[in-house]
Image 1 (tube, rainbow, N blue to C red):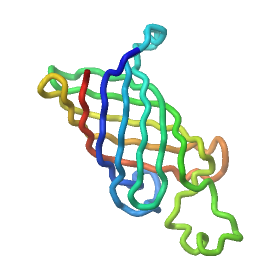
Image 2 (cartoon, rainbow, N blue to C red):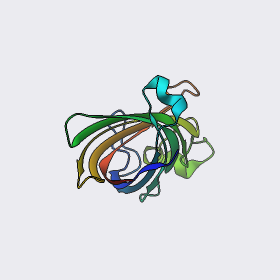
Image 3 (tube, rainbow, N blue to C red):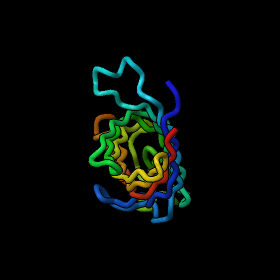
Image 4 (cartoon, one colour):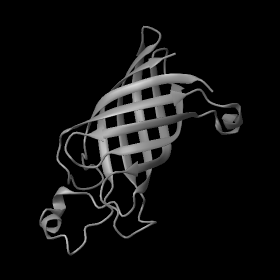
Length: 165
């Protein structure tokens, strides 16, 4: 299982498409490694394993994630992909009543309810020069209210450059 692609990009932090923007609108740095699909995943259409991180510049919540990605060519140079996996956040799970300063600014922090979250992403991109890609990506993390009643989640949208080996 060798390296298939390295991606990096800039994402808009906590855009709030499926929730409220709580942590500002600064850029996030995203880095991802995608691996060739191992043989045992062939039965589920050969998704590629990924490992990645999204580091915030706003002082908000960063993410470390892993999962699997299915991709498909929609023409000679255009592709789409869908990802599912888990993420670990550096953000808050909740804000305690005794934490007066945070309660006053509770609209400035996401309350995830859990450090472990589901991460889903969709991406559309263009492959050029054979090995290079440029793409637009949207991702969402939350736990779907399965682990705690607090589930504010976080959305990100941005542009990424990739190099395929």
